[in-house]
Length: 181
Image (tube, rainbow, N blue to C red; front, side, top):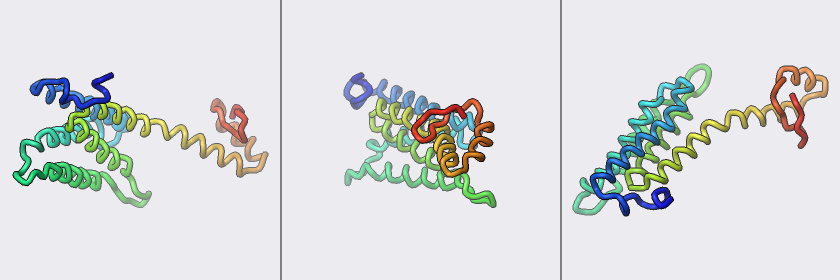
């Protein structure tokens, strides 16, 4: 587990370090992008891989381009700004409301993960990608579950019985007791 918690620059020689970090970047981008691709979103697999890979490469190259004043943070600031612009392009406002906020947030967070990997923390980038994937995938059932509880608690018993037939096959937590809906 040493590779997961420590800087990869400590135990990989230079030609292999960059290759390993780029491979980790592609893997992290694909972990995030497959979820978006599955939901048929425009910012899907290829987009997330390219965002993660691009921010990793820019972070890897930033020490080489460092000026004589030693300001290596300029490259990171430009990555955040550029990716923020991409995310803003993913947000659309229409008659049905604002769409694309999750895609914009994922674009921004994927770039941040790419920067973490480019800094040499490949294990942390992989862990963040798994965490991000889980946080995007799991809130939907939880949201449906809480909506079900709130609507059951606020309605009369007759309406609850009618709605139970619509929710057949799901388990609902109602007033601390599991009941089959």
